[in-house]
Length: 322
Image (cartoon, rainbow, N blue to C red; front, side, top):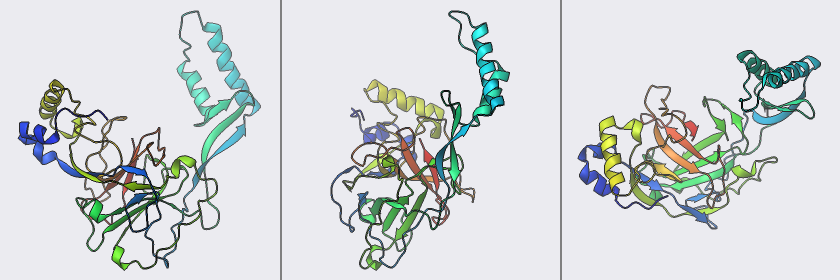
């Protein structure tokens, strides 16, 4: 991230109308270490009650399957390719007609073609067997390290676990593809001897297994991106920051990295506000980033964000990868 030549405080002094949009966030700043169960951590041993079973993933996992094309499908595909080559002229793009695109899309059925084996390769949901694999502890956060978060009454411990496999739209998560996530809020003082960490389930994706890291939390002010500000205000703020050698986005606003609270960035897609089932606009709770010392890789090496209902923290969270 580019070092800013101006601060958020200076920006707010210059634009008082921006102040209502400022949110306190905590940059978690994970770094390789050996955290203890009583510490905030990424990938560390969680403070988990010894008499409480580990949650298990019972939702279908995505697995690759290979399906031999039928003779009719192979001939239809080859006919499209013959027609494309026959009409192609040097310098022209290799354009398919709408009917040819529909034919190949139907044959692929959301997958890709292995033209050597003439097989369709697809990711399909496969039900888990038995009780399902144990979830993997990813993030543990104590209230003392992120006091600006809205903590449910009587709790001071937030734990995030996930299944280290890909899932297509797990229950309650439309338009989401990634690890299935579960959250726990607890009172740390009520936990006696912590349980041991469960073994990593077989077949886990390495990019979903975080390396143990300690946190070095820093409280900051975070500001929203363009689509969550009045147009004239955003244009003025962006121009003011640019004149001083600072990019507003991802430097002064929508700060990247592991983060508790603050504002989400929509740098890969259009702005996509997420609403709770109760109708309330959800707020960013956590951002989990790819790369760095934890060594995770979500989406296309992006950020997994967890959104929470501001009206009732017991309502289901929403997940989004950017």
